[in-house]
Image (cartoon, rainbow, N blue to C red):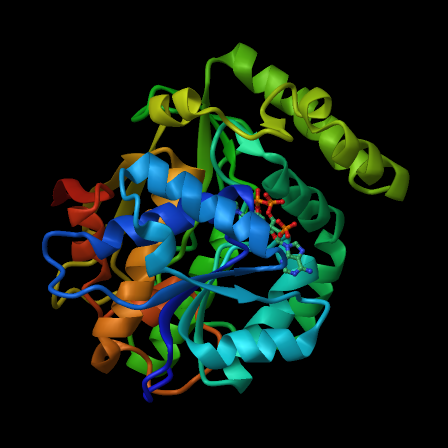
Amino acid sequence: MATEQRPFHLVVFGASGFTGQFVTEEVAREQVDPERSSRLPWAVAGRSREKLQRVLEKAALKLGRPTLSSEVGIIICDIANPASLDEMAKQATVVLNCVGPYRFYGEPVIKACIENGASCIDISGEPQGLSIHDGTWKSAIYGFGDQSNLRKLRNVSNLKPVPLIGPKLKRRWPISYCRELKGYSIPFMGSDVSVVRRTQRYLYENLEESPVQYAAYVTVGGITSVIKLMFAGLFFLFFVRFGIGRQLLIKFPWFFSFGYFSKQGPTQKQIDAASFTLTFFGQGYSQGTGTDKNKPNIKICTQVKGPEAGYVATPIAMVQAAMTLLSDASHLPKAGGVFTPGAAFSKTKLIDRLNKHGIEFSVISSSEV
Ligand SMILES: NC(=O)c1ccc[n+]([C@@H]2O[C@H](COP(=O)([O-])OP(=O)(O)OC[C@H]3O[C@@H](n4cnc5c(N)ncnc54)[C@H](OP(=O)(O)O)[C@@H]3O)[C@@H](O)[C@H]2O)c1
C-alpha cells in the first residue's frame, strides 16, 4: 500500500473497455457521494487517448456532469510497453484493472503495481452475469481451455491442507434439486471455490480462525433449462480443448453461447432488468461446543442480493474495495502480496459500504439444527 501522496488516488486501467466504462462511471458516482467531504484526484488509463476521452464524455452525459472530462486525468499505458505500466503504477495509489483476460494481461499489471508500491484490484478473471460482453467470453474460453495447467500449478504449490472442522462436506450430484430454492442446481464452474479456499487458508494460518468447507452451485430452474445448459456446457468444454475450437468460439460468441455472450455486450435495458442473489446455507457449532465428536448444532442461511452482477454490482464492489484500501488501511493485512478479497477485507468495513451502495448482505434465518 502506497503511503506517500501520489498524483492520483484511483486509476481505472482499461477504461476504454466495455467493463472499464462502467467502472469509470462508478468512480465518478463515488466522487459525488453525499457522505464524501472532498473529491479524490483520479485518472483513466489505456492505450488510446481518443478512446479514453470518449469514455469520459459518455460518462459525463450519462451522469449529467458536463465538467467531468476536465476533472479526470488521462494516462497512456500499454501492457506491451512495461515502462508505461511502471509509469502508470507510480502515479497511482490504487489501480482498478479492467484489462483482461487475466491469463494474458493480469500478471504484468499486478507485478508493476507491486514493484511500484501501488495497490491493485483486479476484475479481469471471472465470468459472471447473464447477457455478457465478449471480453468475459474470452476469459471463460481461455480459463476453461487452460484448466489442466491451472490444476498443475495448484499442485506444485504443495500447500499443507488446512484442518477439516466437522464432518466432510458432502458434494451434491452434478444435477440436484434444491428444495429451498425450488429449482435444479449444478456445480458452479467459476473460480469461487478456489478463491474461498485460499481465503480460508489465510484466515486459518494468519488469524487462527476455523476454516469452513465450501461448495458453490448455480440454480438453473426447471429440468428443460438443465438439459439445454448441459448440451451447451458439453459443447463448450469440447470446443475449448482445441485451438481451432477456441478460435471459432471467439469469432462467433453469440452463436456458440446461444445468445448469452455478444460482441456488443448487454443493452442498458437488459442490465437494468437483471439482478443477482447468492444464498448461503451454513452449519456449524455454537460457542463452547467441541467440534471433534459432535455433529454441527446450528444452522444459518444468509443472502447477498444486488443489481446486475457483471457490470453494475462488480464495479460497485471494485470501487468500494478501492475506497476501503484508501480509508481503512489499519485493518488491512500488514504484509504486501496478492490477496483474495476475503483475506484482504475481512477486518474492514467493506460489507457496510456495500450495503450502503445497493449490495445487501442479510441473515435470513439462524436456528438450532
Ligand atoms: N469479475 C467480473 O464480474 C467481471 C465482469 C465483467 C468483466 N470482467 C472481466 O473484465 C475483463 C475485460 O472485459 P471487457 O468485456 O471489458 O473486455 P473489452 O471490452 O475487450 O476491454 C478490454 C480492455 O483492455 C484494454 N487492453 C487490451 N489490450 C491492452 C494492452 N495491451 N494494453 C492496455 N490495454 C489493453 C482494451 O483497450 P483498447 O480499448 O485500447 O483496446 C480495453 O480497454 C475480462 O477479463 C472479463 O472477464 C469481469
